[in-house]
Image 1 (tube, helix red, strand yellow):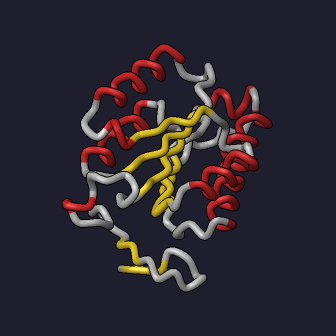
Image 2 (cartoon, helix red, strand yellow; image 1 turned 135 degrees about the horizontal axis):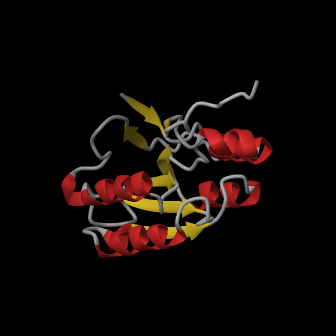
Image 3 (tube, one colour; image 1 turned 90 degrees about the horizontal axis):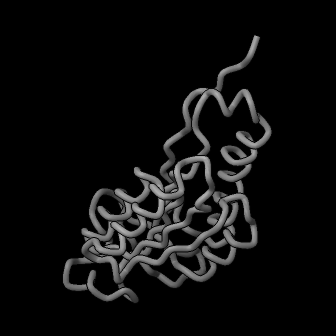
Length: 171
């Protein structure tokens, strides 16, 4: 399936699906390779997703706030592993929060993302009970902020999301 990158008539075509949007001979150049935003990039799943995208020739912008919800040392180790992985020259990391509207708008304005892989989340039943306002703020408002930034920048409507664990409602 193909679709126009912008409705303004620029005519750039990008392919949706499992393969990179550009042929292998064009994937080595950052200016020509598809750029994908991966949120939660310092986490286990996010860092491995970024590695897979880099290995297939994509350019990846990783976004993570490096909070202490998960072990910060583990996140740093994941980022160090990413820096040593094939294609690391096409990876850039931004420390920031998905709830930051200005940052989301700036990122989507600076890069022509062909996709957003949204993996940033606060998961866990316990936190949904103990700190439900933060849980909802990150998972609902953060996702909404990200989607709105992508919409305003006319980023293609491909947004993958790994939802957090189910919410427990105390009785």
